Image 1: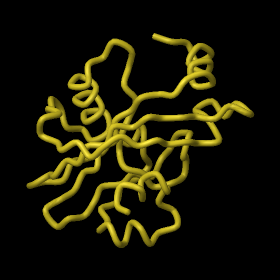
Image 2: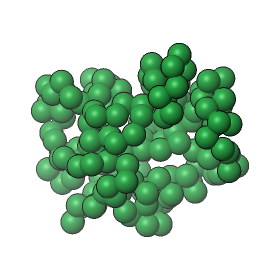
Image 3: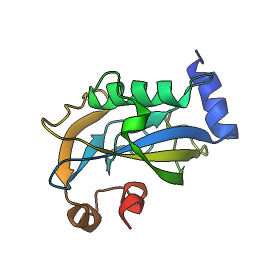
Length: 150
């Protein structure tokens, strides 16, 4: 495991690879969370997380779905790959001046039927289900999330 200082060097020098989960319910609404952490703190964003060193995509997908949604043992094959996206932020997890964050994001859409997943509040302070037009109309939804619906 990297120390915070080592991870800051990684963020300073390289892009991070992540998975975003575009979760939709049977009414076509999308799950977004109000971010507690940097970057993008204080904005509404789809759930997601970075892939760890030596972690397979399948293992990362299952871990992120569990951590972000509280859904254990979810298989990546249950989702549809939506493409590769780039996310650029002027800040970083440590709020270190002059260090931007660059993500390469693998986006997956995941329809959920039945009861809605319950997000964990360590990453997000609240969750909303919004129809894509409503999501696009809000100023507090991050542009990187809006990009999935444009």
